[in-house]
Length: 229
Image (cartoon, rainbow, N blue to C red; front, side, top):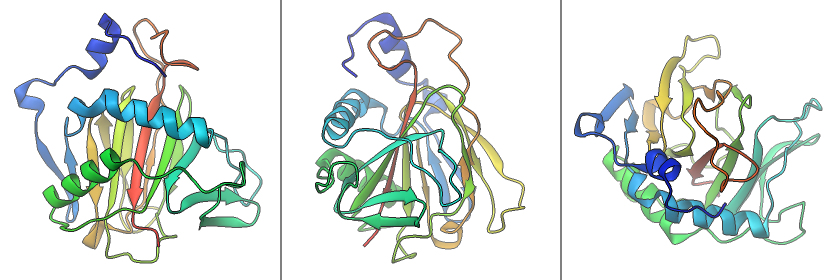
């Protein structure tokens, strides 16, 4: 995932115009911070590369036997996993037999700052699910409910290709709001929105030339930081 300072990279991570630097309220307890992490994008991608070198991306399987289209790995004291036994957190990466890589300080700092901006002070995540979306990959509507303390918010940070984030209500059938997320955007939800259903529409292929320095091809990286234990 080594990146060079070429035109494609500059366009992908360039600072947004002033009118796009905004805090958008999605729902009570949920906000979108546009461009919040854009200045740290290169450092974040480097940290993701190091995490994946220790605990590689993999396509997990749902309890029903379906292979997820999104590739995943984790870092922190606990990692979220899915298999035929169900959904849960574990301190050991089942693919390597080793503890998950440590949570990078940059992840912790940005998550705490974003949570504070959303009104959730003293957020100290201990887990980060790292999702890699390639064109066509999606995430169906779901709730984050394997954590022990629902008083803690969820912080979700986007890098790379833009995506359509679906933010619904407290019932699966509630019509979700469609939000276009770009690299550096951060969504925080907690309080009355903590158990909101959310997902990602199928990722669209880029409409410009592919970046040759981002194997295995154009993708979106999502960091979801949580207080799991």
